[in-house]
Length: 543
Image 1 (cartoon, rainbow, N blue to C red):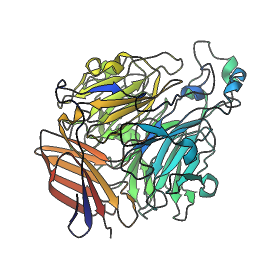
Image 2: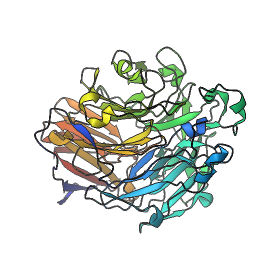
Image 3: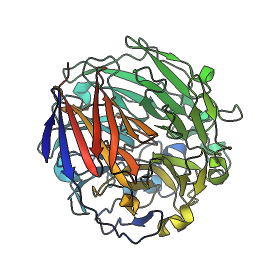
Image 4: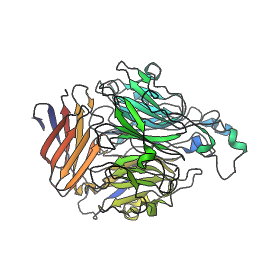
């Protein structure tokens, strides 16, 4: 049903049917449906033996609706045999590996459309992100590589065109993550590219122990880059003039969010084994690094941690966005207290449950729709193909988490070498499913069975004048005394991008008392008594 509300917005109501059993246990379980869904992607690092940091970094997955049919599609990145990185005996893999795009058929299955879409990049790829950079209503795709990155422009007919060279986004460095946002408020999406390190083409091989390969501090760091969208299909690097040029970063992923509630989007960069960066948006296209001052630079004991992919979310529902970062130790749970961040990794019992693993793909998601953000982590050894279980932690709503992995499905009793992960409601049934990319192994699609026994609401803010998602908008949902906030920045976690439709669990409530959207232009719209269990699409006319 379609209904016009007010003077500046359209609201779309989509009825979504339930398909899960109603007699399941009190908490949802995750079911591995990879094979029946038609997903056959298997990651390879382009060699037969894991011998260096390039091969061990892994890959991610991007959830986005490339054909605008209302069903989220999946793009997986893959490795490749690479001179100077891979062993000679791996040459037989040369040219046989590529990224893959799976179209969601809307019936629980996917079809591999890589070839017809023209997005099977054969480069050694790691991260990926998607955004409508040219404001034409179609979501474009950006692939982060060891070597030049690739920008695919969506043609709107199911195909893409490689526009990397002419766009100026063929960054030649080793890139891992690229969140999109409009940093200067001109209506065009800019992109922050997180770059890792300068690999030495194996020169260290004669000097390290057989038990492992050199870590990140053995290599020089590469600078991150901010690219300004010129509005004509091209981009200009503005890193230094924006105040974002920092040495010794070795970025593994980055996220963007309004962390200080001033209406401006900040940048948080998770670096490997060195201090993390928090670039506070000063307005006027300028940023200032304040990570150390605000408690965001180091781990709980003042150390540089092997930070993977940061995710932002209001864990304690105090109206401030917190940050979770998986790492090779105990993880970092950084709670936003307003004037600074405080490490609650131990007191929240996250360290207890995650300390025995090496965390990579971390997700904050309300998997049971009770209104509180839970925690999923994909785990796997960093230097060897040693398998580990993934972890699912339930948010108790009192500042603590409980490990529910053992009772959350057979998948959690298996072991993989996990890397990137994301969440997506691929079947549009109102609960969040999970996708995991495993190093040198099959990817996994985990269907959420039972999460929609609680009510839910998806909010999709769009800009009518720009024909795209309102990237950077903040959505607030109030149910009784529970207040939830989310910023529309789909790129989150390690090497991956999540479902762009903002998902809110409503518990037993049959409506949201208030839905508030703060648009990128600063204006605010409010909607009262919004019914539960729908995709609530709001189209802003703009100023």
